Length: 162
Image 1 (cartoon, rainbow, N blue to C red):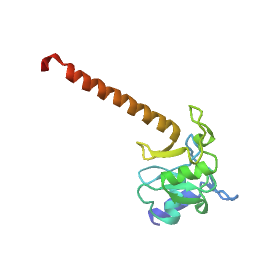
Image 2: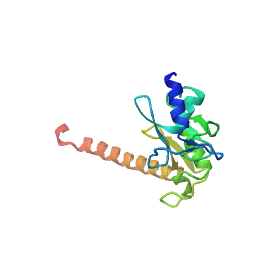
Image 3: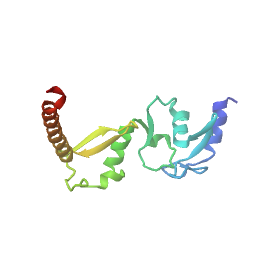
Image 4: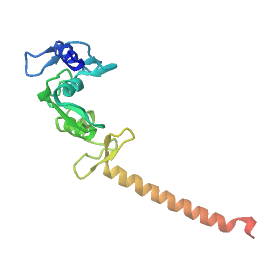
């Protein structure tokens, strides 16, 4: 028996296939995602399900759930997507924590016209209030003009140049 067949037998023995979602019955992490010893380390069970059913996962890609059940390993409930795809999916289903917020911290409503997105340091995306950004940018430009005037006035009054 090849290693892959041994992994497949071990893996599917830990799955309850009685419902539409195939539930991982073995070890799970704090968020409810299954864990499975695959290769030299523990892997998330839904990722192993994808590997066994569909092959390799391209770099930078996630395995997402259509059913939104972290314990589900049914290959027909899994899809390949980016982090942005996953966030958009969560947001469209009302599961993303920030989507429950209807207004920014300054009280501006999150509308299509007033909401922008920007990339974060961890390759994710976050939304921001365009009105707050406009106010912040305008304030920065005003302060920058004042500082330039002060610097210009200071250079002409410098006693060393007299």
